[in-house]
Length: 121
Image 1 (cartoon, rainbow, N blue to C red):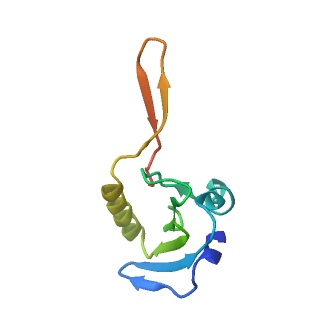
Image 2: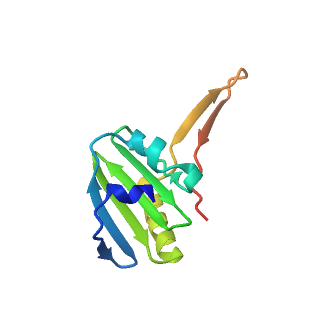
Image 3: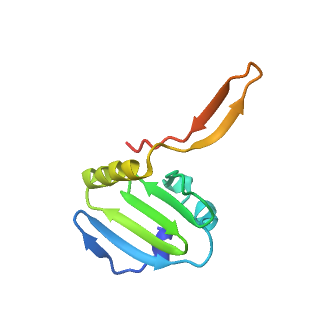
């Protein structure tokens, strides 16, 4: 898996999860377009913090969460589906509702806001 080369190989164990840490000098768009690819099962996890210096991606089938934050990289690998879903629930609490990704202004004066989908099951 491409993302593994951006983290240390020795994990830090946490209950139900292994955390791998690393560093990449660049920006999150490298991971968007070259590493955490939708065609390989990754899904972007949208937050209000998303910017060139921050991004999160999930891989539901492999039970992985990858975070890029100002150069720091963190890969979380969950032992079970239940552990993964518990962490996803915690992330949803921390990050709140999904941010608006597009807004349409209609001719009749209505405004339609579109949000991404965070469903992982």
